[in-house]
Length: 79
Image (cartoon, rainbow, N blue to C red; front, side, top):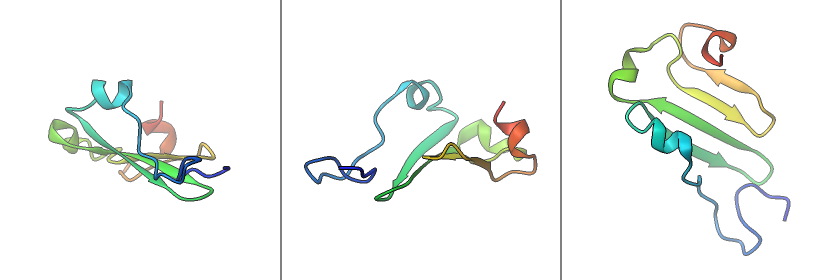
């Protein structure tokens, strides 16, 4: 169907449960923002991780472009 936001039956997609969501559940919440031709996955800090203002929220999109919303740069946060 060449879409990220719906499966072949037209059902909206959700971020599947995975290792990161389980392993990092005390530090981040994960969100999927799908559109027809693009998507972005964002990890937003929670709990003690909120103190890490250097990287803050981390995102990656379907093109592999990584971003961060903290005071450091992408190369520091995405090691």
